[in-house]
Every structure is written in C-alpha cells, then in structure tokens.
Length: 321
Ligand code: ADP
Ligand code: TRP
Image: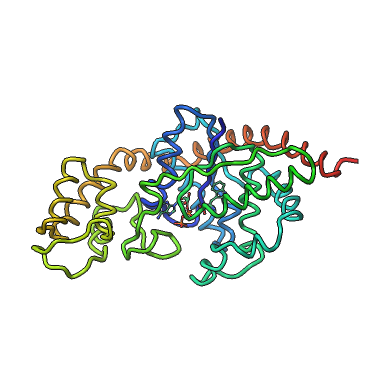
C-alpha cells in the first residue's frame, strides 16, 4: 500500500502539523511504502521571498527527520525537484470542472486571511491532486482541513479514468479523528496563516510565552468546566500522561482546575516531548550539505516513479503521436 503526504515549507512547523500529519506519517514507516515531500511549489502561493522559501525548505526537511522520519525507509523529497508534477497539473486542470474548484473553501479562507488571490492559489488543489495521482497513492494522511482537497483529487482521478481509461488509483484520505483539528492558542484551528501556533521547536522561554497565551474563559477555579470545549484541555490531552489526564479531567468536571497551573504543567510536557527531536534537529541544521544530499537522492527515487505515470498519462491523452 502506498501512503503519501506533503507539507508546505511556509513557516515554522507546529504541533497541529505534528499530530495531524507528521506523526501519522512517521508511524506509517513500519508498514507501508511511504512517500513524504515538502511542497515548495504550493508554498509559492503565499511565500514570495527567495531566502524564506529556500531556508524553509531545508528546515522542514530537518524538522521531519528530527521527529523520526528515516529517509532510508521512505521516499523523501522536495516537490519542485520532480518537474513531472507540473506537467500533470496542466493535464488535470484541463479536465477539472470549474464548479468543483469554485466550491473549495481554502481559496476563500486564505484570501480572507490576506493571502494574495492568484491563479496559482485558486488552482492549488489541482497541483495537490497531481502530487497524489502522480505517485498512485492509496492513502493520504492529513488533518481535517485537507479533506475537501482529497475529495477534489478523487473526483479528478475518477474523471480522468472515465475520460481516458483506467489510469489512476483513486486515493483515500486518512484522518485521525482524535487529532483531526488541533486548536491554536486562540481556539481556532492552529495554522501558520492564523498566527495562533505553538511551534514544535521554540526555545523554552518562547514556548512558555506561547502556552501562557492560550485563551481560556473566566470561570473561577472552584467551578466545574467543560473539558471538551476548552482549547487548553484539548492541547493538554495531546501531551499529558494518561493517569494525569484523568485527574485533570476530573478537576474540570468537579471543579478545581486552575488554568495557570495547567499551562505551567503543559509547558513541561511539551518541552520534554520534543527533547530528543530538538537535539537531533540542532545537529541536522548544522549540516545543510547532508540534507541536500538526502533530498537529491529522494527526488531521484520519486522521479523514477513519476515518469512511469506521466508516460501513461501522455499516452492515454494523445500527447504521444
Ligand atoms: P498550516 O495550516 O499551518 O499552514 P499546512 O497547511 O502546511 O498547515 O498543513 C500541513 C499538514 O498538517 C496537513 O496535513 C494539515 O491537515 C495538517 N494540519 C495543519 N494544521 C492542523 C491542525 N490544527 N490540526 C491537525 N492537523 C493540522
Ligand atoms: N495542501 C496540503 C497542506 O496545505 C499540502 C499538500 C500538498 C499535500 N500536496 C499534498 C498533502 C499531497 C497531502 C498530499 O497541508
């Protein structure tokens, strides 16, 4: 089974990215043929700064490897290093129904957050469909926000197969319900573009500041509170050991949960949780040549797969004459 997912190098990776996508992918290393890539072409829809995109790409690679992705047990590359994906994007865009594209929420959401409305931003889901279909992925682990994009990829695959004959695997999303949407410090979905993230690799002081800024209500300590609607509890849940989680849950329900105290405790858990990864990351970022070598090897392997699919697409569509 082929499992594939990508991440944008458009800012510091955060705990929503980790629990929504990176951790499920790393766990998949054990049992699947795994494809992981850094989507620098997608990031161009919001980053128009050479240094930021280039540095962000290597940092995302270091982050993923520090968190446990082993490039010897998967194919790990940078999207733009396999140019076949852009040709497939064009072919798919000629069959992607405009109405389907117009129904995508993420374009409107991003524009409302101040991202420039470009043609690339509008057709972002077609490039994403090409990413998935080019490698004939069966399963795509993502957070809930990407569900609609997966539906678009499926619709396009079905339409292509119907129009030109069986060519693409129709992919399935894999969304872990428990962590489908990690809330940000303001209670909205945690997202780089909302400025509400807790980044994975902050220094201790910054981490403390971010955790302390998690918004909570003004219910007095002694009063009962609903853990399910409290974004602090939703984040706490991801890191606390089970027995402690049960205790804090009871404090919410029965009264006695002190937000400030829980936040302090959470800082400690997050810090410890990523301690090993932090040390590995420090080493990796000091060796960009090594990272580039890993990514170049990954791109070579990915490309071998990509050309096979693209050749078939060209044939079916009549681009070979
Ligand atoms: P962002 O919204 O911060 O820009 P990306 O769009 O780069 O994040 O998302 C990368 C991956 O992380 C995707 O699979 C996405 O679904 C997942 N993800 C992002 N934010 C969250 C979140 N708050 N909770 C769960 N998963 C998330
Ligand atoms: N759109 C995804 C996001 O913002 C990133 C992405 C691009 C992706 N191509 C993909 C995810 C292919 C899964 C499969 O998070």
